Length: 33
Image (spheres, rainbow, N blue to C red):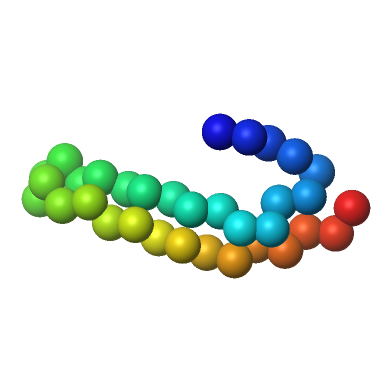
């Protein structure tokens, strides 16, 4: 995973161990320097 002062987009893939289902959440994150 890359961490930087300016992150435009972040893709989070969450795997639920209870249901065994993978949920991918794509969120747009805007940060100003």
